[in-house]
Every structure is written in C-alpha cells, then in structure tokens.
Amino acid sequence: MPSAEIITIGTEILLGEIVDTNARYLARCLRDVGIDLYRKTTVGDNARRIAQAIQQSLERCDIILTTGGLGPTVDDPTRDAVALAIGVQTEFRPELWEQIQARFRRFNRLPTENNKRQAYVPQGAIAVENPVGTAPAFIMEPGSRAIISLPGVPREMEYLMENAVLPYLRQRFQLKGIIKARTLHTAGAGESQIDDRIGDLEELSNPTVGLAAHSGQVDVRITAKADSEAEADALIQPVEDIIRQRLEHWVYGVDGETLEDVALKSVASLGWTLTVVEAGLGGNLIRRLANATGPFLGGEMLTGIPTPDELCDLAEAYRAARGAQVGLGVAIQPAGEKQDVHLVLITPDGCQQFTRPYGGPPEYAPRWALHNSLDVIRGLQANN
Image (cartoon, rainbow, N blue to C red):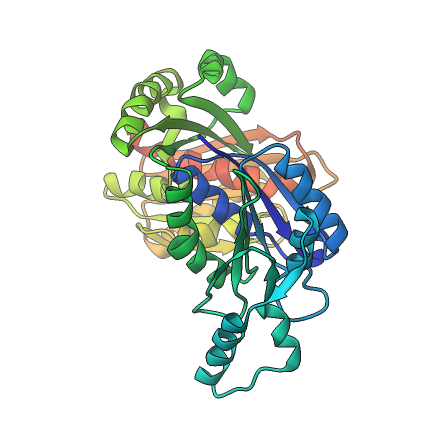
C-alpha cells in the first residue's frame, strides 16, 4: 500500500487561532481507500519552510497532500513553495484564469488583479478545476510520487478530494484495498485497567488494536487492512468479540454511539423518566442529555457546592416536581480543593450515594464527573 503525509499550511493554524479540521477529514479519506498515513505537519505561510517540509516528505512517502495557501494574496505561498521544492518555476495557465473569471461572473462580480495569482501553477503540474471556489488545485508528479495541493476552505477541499483526488489516487496507485476502523467506547475503567486485560491484543499486526484515553472514558480502536469491507469486517469481528468478552460491562457502545444515548436507553428500558441536578459541571451534563434522544425531563444547575445529604434532598425535590422516576444529583468540588465527586441516584427503590475521588488535572474534573454520572445512569438497567 502507498504511504502518505499531510501538510497543513497556514500561520493561523500554526499559532492555534483556528482548529485544523482539514487534516482529520483527509486522514479518514486516506484510511478508507487503504493508504497508510504516517505524518501530519503544520507549516506557516512561508514558501521556503513549506518547500523544506515537502522535500523531507518526498524522502519518506509516496503521496503528499497539502491544504491551504492557494488564495490570491501575498501570504498564499503554496504554489511557489511546491515549485521551489521540485526545482521548477510557476507558469500562468490561461484556461485557469478563464475558469476563475467565469466563477466570478456567476456571482456578478469582477475578479481583482491579484486573483490572477491563482491561475499560476508549478511548471508541469496537472491543474484541477475548482467548480465550487476560485482557487484551482493542482497535482505534481515527481517520479513515482504525487504532490496534491488543495484549497484550505473546507467545503472546497472536501469537494475536490471526493470528486477529483480520490479517483486520481485510485487510478494512479491502483488502489484496491481499504483500511477500516471500529471503535469500542468504554466507561467505568481507566486506561491502565483496559490495557491490563487486552494488552496482548495491542501487539497484533492486522487488525491493530489501540487505546485512546479521555477523562472518564477510554476508546478501543480496532483497525484492519483488507481488499474489501467484508474482509475487513471478518478480521475485526473476532477481535471485537474477544475485547467485549474481556471488558464486559465496561463497553457501552461502538463508533457513533454516545454515552448519553446509551444512558437514556437504559432509563427507557425500565419505563422510567429522568431528571438531574448538577453543581460544578457548568451545565454540561444537562446539555448532553437534552441533546440526546430519550426520557429526559430536564435539569437544574445548583448554586454553591452542596453536601451529599443536601444533594440528595435537592435531587429528590427536583425529581418530585417534574414527576420523574429517577433523579440524579452530581456535585464536584471547585478547583484548588480536594476534588471528590459526589453522586446521588434516586429511583423507586430508594436513594444511593457515591463518592468518587478525582486526582487528575483540575480542568478535566468536570468532564470526568460528567462521564461518571452518565455511567451511573447507564447501570440502571443492569441493576434492575
């Protein structure tokens, strides 16, 4: 399988002023067609540094995808950078200039003189028309490799990737296989506990198994390379079965399933409804449940940090006022203090209280408490 690297271009990305969503999209596209992605790099708007990054990538991989830097302004240096990396000049393409002018005419606008910069590409490049924007893309083919330069505007980049670049890659590199990933979501256990049970599976070569830890949640990713989706599924399934057997109730969902959806399904399976009161979570638990589908009757943010007994009384009062069968209360100590998370769960069977110590970074405590709260709700079905 060919290998690839992504180079995201833009000083605003490098400085953290905007989030790079393009690289994530491109990485998934490459994965889905069976191309191994080895590196992602971000470079500011400097032609010399971009050219150096491209030259280094050419020594390591078959395909280089760049995004950004194809606009009309002086600080859009990708065309010059690619030409510099390959050792050629840029050249004006009249047909690209006509496409750009036609695009402006459709919007009853006139291009400015600097838009003409977008009709320049490195000598020998394959120009790629951009029907959804004003910045044409282009492809360079130094030897057996390919440098593909796409606009940075996500809508334009995605359109060109799907309609021009992926067909080109399939033909140029005779792509037949795919890389498919399945992600199992877990709650109620830490990364070290998960690793202790499935560490031997993390040494597999195909499919591979990897862990991604979040505050209060660990994802287990299974990735397989195969010639077809059916063959990839056949590789993934037995490994998934082993993981589920070993992790048991810690696994709550797969791929797009969310913990809040699973939690509310647990409530619904018992024919119950749910309310929550929270303190110290910034309303995030209420918002997550409100955006999910299920029997959630509302929540209330508390002022101050109540004691466990006070939390139980407040959760019960709000539950009774809304006529729900289940009331959850969660309170976390403010940053700087011992950050115990207090949880109360009120059901028709009575009130349970939990105290869960938190020892991580204070800024992650609300997220950790949120996942623990949802996990407590998820456990209702198993306990009834």
